[in-house]
Image (cartoon, rainbow, N blue to C red; front, side):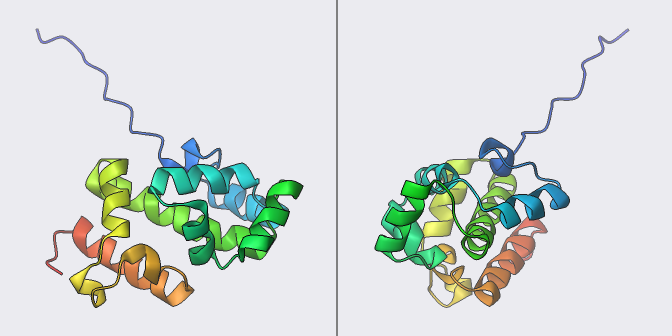
Length: 144
């Protein structure tokens, strides 16, 4: 008789690691309350970009980021844009099975996106959807 081996637990994911419950209702509530600026700092670190670089993608001026860090919380619209980037890293990590590889992919120019890095394109909702579509194609083995 073969020994029973319980299934390996699926990784909790980037969102969970950032202190965000991945349930949609919890994410909506977190965005409406405004994300803690520590999420911003940690996400920049995980992406391998400077805080200024992530602020540019999220649409935060350096002076605004400094004020938010002093206050400790982002506004709901800023939180929504930050969550959009975190969700892309989360999904790319599931596809590439490694967070560092996913972050590298998000930072590198991509021919399927017209030579633009996915992270740079994700500074708009429409751009983020294009990146999500590309991740979906990669996930399903569709050549892009």
